Image (tube, rainbow, N blue to C red; front, side):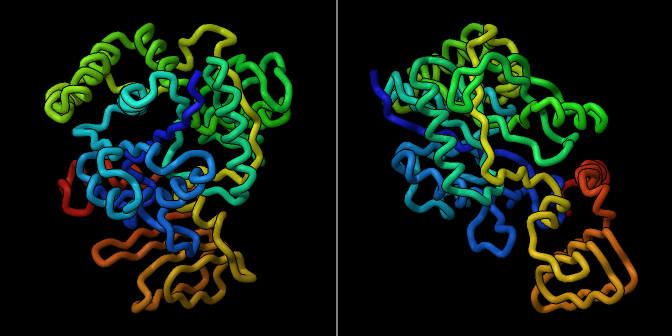
Amino acid sequence: MSNQRFACIMAGGSGTRFWPQSRAALPKQFLAFQGSEESLLQATVRRIRGLLPVENVYVVTSQRHVAETTRQLPDLPVDNVLGEPAGRNTAPCVGWAAAHVRARDPQGLMAVLPADPYITDEAGYVATLDKALCAAEQGSMVTVGIRPTRPETGYGYIECGAPLGDEVAVVAKFIEKPPLEVAERFVQEGKLWNSGMFFFRCQVILDQIATHQPQLSAFLSACSEAIAQGNERTLVEAQYAALPSISIDHGIMEKAQAGSIHVVQGDFGWHDVGSWTSAWELSETDNEGNATVGKALLLDTQNCYVRGPSNKLIAIVGMSDLVVVDTPDALLIVPRERAQDVKKIVTHLKESQGDKYI
């Protein structure tokens, strides 16, 4: 049986919590953070080069971001960038990539990876992904669960069942994002964060889609024929936007037969860069806990994240626990503890200003 490896990088997110730096034309996965010159997407593709060849990497993104994706990833074959005409969540994204993998290798192994995590232990990350791919060789679906470092209300959790050895276990249950008091109990009980990474043979996930998402499966069957005939784009433009919008978690993983999903435990400095608070947590800070990008003068100020252009001074006096992000046409000021609410600004702007600031 073939053990050829492929990757599906999910890069279709809008990054609204990183407004005003992240915009519809250039969302956060295409931006660099923490002083790096690499975007989050570029770092994700680079990290997996030891696991599989670049010609086996597929990136699924918005149609409007295909050009930026190919610009940032010049070594990636152009045909490996799949541009969605409309965002339909992760189940169609993964299924579409699986159809492409099946066209090249009907038993190919797939790693499904978000484009935007920040990883501090890259060697540990690669070793964990290799273990997950090996676990998927026998036909099971596999995910990676992250050992929590704190109670977190912004992540889903995984409850582990029977151990299978070498830090692999059966998934007993996927659990939705909990309130704080429940998250504290989950950490004590040894539950894992759901990383959103999945591993399986392409035919396994396509069979699961056929069982649980028949409309999507019908599209993917037609897509396979269109790939072979060279007219895939016409089909995608005509039918993709009408597909159900559902995540791979809700649409497949939570519906799968008990015991058919395994989890590999990971501990490699995984950070879901989900808000400006995450950026502050990952940054080097001064003696007062402040992190700055660009020019900043901070007096009697503690635990702030300040980001602005290199040719403009941002001065702050007597403040604490703020996020300040300055761009040419918009300025954000928000308490760090409310950084998740930045997405509400984007929603309001869409309703009141159209696309002017988003």
